Image (cartoon, rainbow, N blue to C red; front, side, top):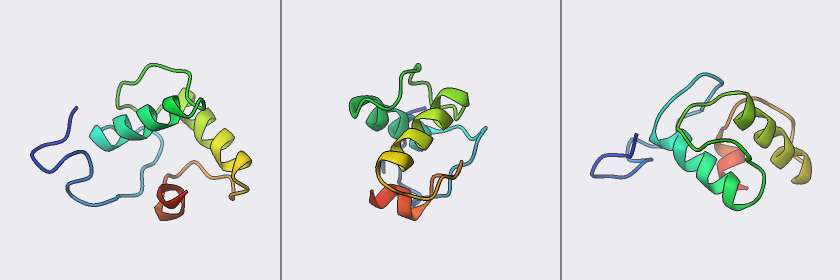
Length: 76
């Protein structure tokens, strides 16, 4: 689950969608948990709890509500 020698985003920033798994998902969960948005288990799987956290984050940052984690989400 942890990234290889280049870390969780070693292959770049992909658009993450519901159902995706990986070290990048794990890092997003961890960061959103630190900021108080994510209440679920940090496990590297994009499920319903992460989707809810993403929507809360998007609302509080006046972003378009989307299930995808893309460049604009990473920048915020």
